[in-house]
Image (cartoon, rainbow, N blue to C red; front, top):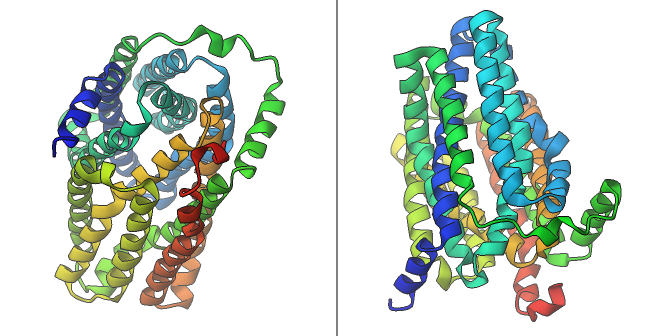
Length: 410
């Protein structure tokens, strides 16, 4: 007990953690208000047109494929603090520009709000990871990641409520203004971060293309990152299979109305919040690979039970279990990446691994509807659970790798 509180106390006194958490709070407010305001606005304008609503997801996920690695490469070239501030400022400017377009032009401009912010986030997020590597001691890495996961989990619960309330009470114009102000507030707070190290930007003599190739060679030369990429792909394939089919879990397996889906989401969100808090307290006692395996195993068990269950309480419990260990999965992944990636390559490594997950997920998401017509829902959920088990087998070599001296990994 005596070793836990001082560690967390010193982490919370870290100027970088304080600043990035407050800035992240405003970013989360902006993201959730934006997402739900746009979703409800488009639904209202198109009378629930599925194609129009699906374009929102396209605008959100497409930039990950197109800009993730490019953004990560530039994050390794540019000063991270300056990059994050400029990304938030440009996001705010784009939101206010779109607000003007809404007032005097076409309502379809709302799609650009998600698209532009998603593009800029591909430059900002890896810069944040790089700053994390610079300013958080290695022994506090998991606890720091736990703080972020707890905040994210809290917004999974309150974000939809907040976004829906703002739109229903004030409409799209005020909602977008709040989003713009939230991004501006984040940019202002980020100015309090410790200054960038000037030397980071003075040695960029190689070309962009050469640095991108160096990023691929770097990942390929490190077995632990290659293994993690395999885990990412297995998890992405598994998640993509079931993500579009959650509504059928309620209507077909449970025989309930669609509105009951919100209770499954709520259970998952509350569990993530609790799991994030537990991870913050206990993560320092476990290796990141253990946390990752716990997350993968709980997802496998939870998804299997969800697909098999015909009882609401059991499905709810399975959703809760999966959500409870979800923060452990994210913390494990991020900590492994941060501990086994040199500072100069943090952006590019994230830019390579993230599209592996997203690409795999979108691939099976596109097949989910076809598979639903050919197989029982139970079978599809079992396939997803099996893919998580495959991911566990893929990551087993990590246990041997992490027993080796860290010097061998660099």
